[in-house]
Image (cartoon, rainbow over all chains, first blue to last red; front, top):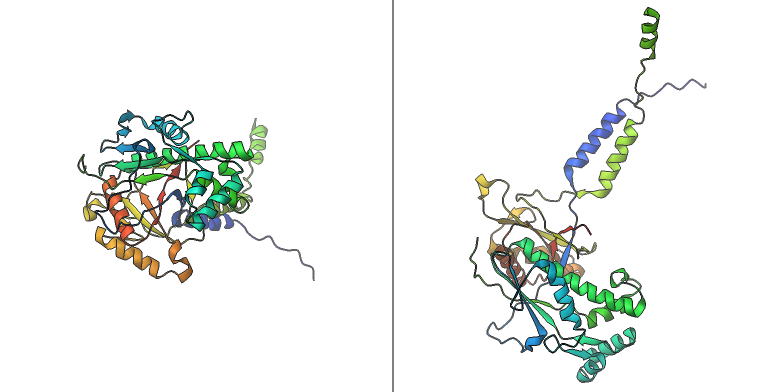
Length: 215
Length: 153
């Protein structure tokens, strides 16, 4: 019964696959779901409530106006210099009296003696880090105008996030010889949480003002 | 001379196209893997800004999208920046209601994981973005993501 198998004409195969390819090209997009994650603050119950008093040296005020110019602590600054400024602000390596104060972890533990959960958190952080790291009290206050372009806003957010990552990387490198960004959430969760506790992403956004007018 | 010409004619051969489907299939698989399905039809022009410090959206978390930009059909929708929530144009005071509705349809254990991804054109002014953020705060949709493209290192 063995008959010679006739050749199958595969000439239209290319056409069919072309058709499929074009279908996928049209119906799909390349855009990826990635970006800068942020957590919005809850609305204040009482709008007249005064914000907590913060020492002037602990705040880095970043203002962006409607023509995308930036003022950092009353100094005009280009976007390229912002990261370095923020890193120095957060680390304060020379203990400059004009830069933020620092508070050691043991000090924080002593302060939170009344609050068991807080105390445990700092105690655990202390154990994971294995040293009495001095936590900066610095907070970056970011305020933009209604006329600021979204591009500029993202650039500023990005530069500040990079600064924080840089400081975290530095500490992580010194303690364990690895970068913070290469820690895995599955295996090094304690370390990640400890680093995040001592170097928080302290960026606060002020309610926007409309000075430059809407464009 | 005639002999020579005849030989040349014989040497003409057909191009072997047997591997053509393979190549196209390869391309097809590449596109199937790297792209995602278009979920909504966009009515606004969008060019996301670039950033270095970007994270992927968590796979497990449910995401709702707000697209902000200039309408693609200015004759119908004007030339001002508009925004669409998933696939509809909305007014600013409808956002809070929309966000609450989006959360309502989620299963119970995912309700507090809802993320709103803001896909905003880089030319957009912050005023509109701020208004949207303010409305999201009213709806207690605090987790947001500014969609950005990766900047080359």
